[in-house]
Image (cartoon, rainbow, N blue to C red; front, top):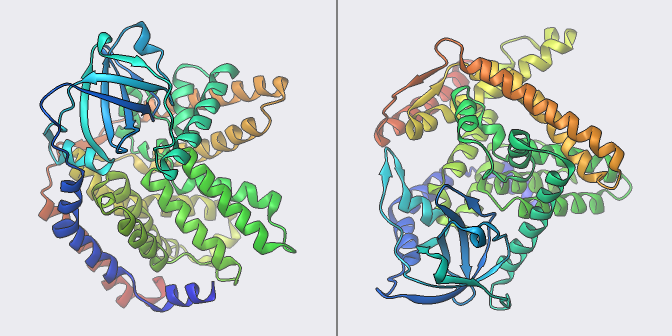
Length: 455
């Protein structure tokens, strides 16, 4: 632990991380994508596979992700919608007789569908008609230990989602609660996602460090024994990673889990300060484990948000003298939230404009609304899961959760109708995006040199 602390304090990892990113962009990434590409035969094949996600029911098809028991190939499957396909659930085994095709090429702006599918490990896609498939009991022994573990945790998540339905969480409330607590976003209404995007609040729908820090804090209150500090921190880290598996190992959650794990280890030596080096060390490990993560939008947004917070938040906080903040605790809390929101926006706004052609002008106002409500909702959801055996209390919790979601949605809907709610039609090239971040980095360096007290 002391060696890790010394390493993170002395070795500058930002240049190393940038060099690794460049190497992945020009060398490793293309090789990894080519490795995923499979020349599927131009004939119907019989495959046996396991459903590894929550099925998404659309107008004409039911979309499921499959993992073949032979070869562990990940496939995107569209089943023609009927009564049978609507009953498919996570963990079901399927035997399918159909053509398997390469992932089709499709681009919209800077979004590359083939690259997106490669980032998520897909090597093909198929369409199956009602007569092309059937249920089959499959042995999972041929799957890797990691895949079996992920599937087991996802099945536990499915049970928790079913509990939400049994408790009476419905409609929009169910979609929001499922997304914010368990990372299941398939039930979110498209118009609701658009509202959150317009006001700059989409980040609360994606699991991230906010969610894991709440879990870390809650568990620490119960098991943070000073007498058994090492044992308690190990238990907390294992709990964090269990939750990470439970929500599907998304890049933003893995990043947060890794950083919290390092934070927990450093806390044993009373070195609890998060740093840019800690973030870069996390990025390097994740990129070495899966180079294609670099192309994942969630990975990019998550790391840029945290990097900007680590760099710019201390500068912004010092704009109001510390003695004034200490005299007015409400001002300190509000200013702290504003600084985090502004810093995160500095890091992510160029990427959001690059991918979506949009800049949400009311993001600061939205964050003052959505972050406190989202935090309250997360605490209530966690408390509901821990007290699921108490039926009387569950009814009260469901009512409270639904009321918070409705109130939050109504507020954000109102903000989305304010004048100049967003700037649309922004078109950035990759070179322009790089130049913007170069300007942001240069600005930080110049401010640090000109005003050392703000660092």
